[in-house]
Length: 533
Image 1 (tube, rainbow, N blue to C red):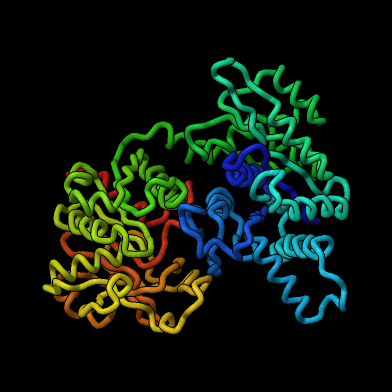
Image 2: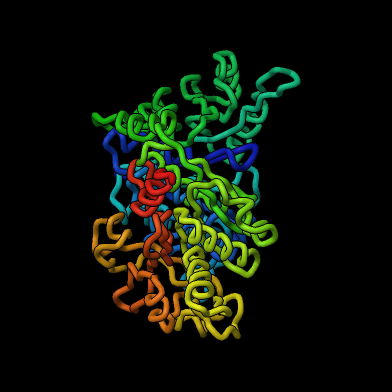
C-alpha cells in the first residue's frame, strides 16, 4: 500500500520546500524504498510555459513534454523518480478538468463547488500518480504558504485525504521559518507558532516540523516550538543553511529524519545509507582539486532561478571532474553595449542558455563569436546553438545579413527559421516542440566522445530550428553536424573543427543531469575548460 507525505510551508515563500521534498525522497531511497513526488501549484495558469522567468523562474521540461515547475528538477536530480506531466498539479489543470466534466454533464445536474468537486479532483490526481508508479511513498509538495487564498483548496484536499487513508498511511511535514533577529541577538519562534496555528485551524496537525534557520537551534528553542506547536521535541528538525543543497539529505540523516518518517508511516526499513552520496557528491563539492571559471551569458541573469538547471548541471560537471566551477553571470545586454572582451576575456569557458525574444540577442551573438575566435570552450543550449549558427553564417560563410526569423521575419538569410508545424500555431501554451526526441550522433565527433553512444534521447523546448538550406555552405566552411533527428532530419547538434570545444545543441541537456551522474555534454565541457591554455 502506497503511503503519502504532504509537505507544506508557512511564514514566507522560498523556504526550500522543493529541496526538502527532494531530500526526504533521497533519504527514503537510501533506505531501499521507491518514491515518487508531486508538486501542487496554486496558480491558475495551466502550466508555467507562458510565464516570464522573472515571474516564475525556470520552466522545467519533463521527458513526456510537460512544462512544469522548477521543483520537479530537484526531484529528478535527487531521486530516481520518474517525473511526468502528471507530477505537476496546478489550479488551472484542476479547474479545467472540473469544468470539462461539468460541460459534459458528468455531475448530473448538481451544483459544482470547491468542496467536494475541486477537492475530489485534487485527491484523484494525487492517487493517479500513486497508481501509475507503484511506489512505496508519494511525496506531495503544496506550493505557496499556509494562509494564501490560492492554497486553501489543496490544503482542504489533503485534510480530507488524511482522513480517508487512515492513521499511519499519511504524514504531514511543515516547513517553517525560525528567524534570528541580529539586533536583539535572539531566535524567534513566534512565526512558526502562528504558521502551525493556521494549519491547525484548517484541520491539519503537522507531524514533523522542518525549521529553516541560519544556525542550529538550541534545546530550549526546540522545547518551546514543540510545546506551542503540539509536536514531540524529537520531531522538531533543523533545516539550517548549508553551502550546498546536496548536503541537505546528509544533515537530515544526522537528525534521523528518514527513520522518523518510516517509523511514523509504519514502513519496514531496508539496509542502505548515504555513504556513496557523501563521498561522490558532498565531499567533492567541498574539497575540489581544480577550478574553472564559466561565464553564463543570459537575458535573465538577475534572477537566480531563471537558469536553475543550468547552474546545477555545471556543479554536477564540476563534481565529475573533481573541480569547483565558478559561475560568472553575464548580462547579454551589457556585452551588446560594451563588447565581449570586457566580460569574457579571462574566463575558461562560455555557456549561452536558452531564451526568447530580441532583447540582448546581439550580445549573445558577440559572446559566441568571442569564444569561437579565442578558442574558449563553448556550450550553446537551444538559443545558444542558434546564436552560434548566426555568428558562423555572418563571419565564416560570408552571409553578412544572416539572422533568425524569430528576430527578423523578413531577413534574406534566415539560417534559423520557424519549424513547419509551428507556422499555423496561434495559442502559445504547450505548443512548442516539447519533451524527448531521438538524435543520431556522428561517430568521430567530440559529441560522440562525450556520449559514447550513436543514439540519444534529449528534451526539447523550442519553436525555431536550423534551416537545412544552409547546411551545405556551413559544412564547407568547417561546421560539423554532429547530431541529427532521424525522423525529421533536423539538426540537433553542431560542432566546429579545430576548436578545443565548441558545441551547440538544440535540446536542453541540463534537464537530465544529476549530481552523481553529470550530463555527458556538461562533463566534457568542464573537462575542456580545465585544460587551460
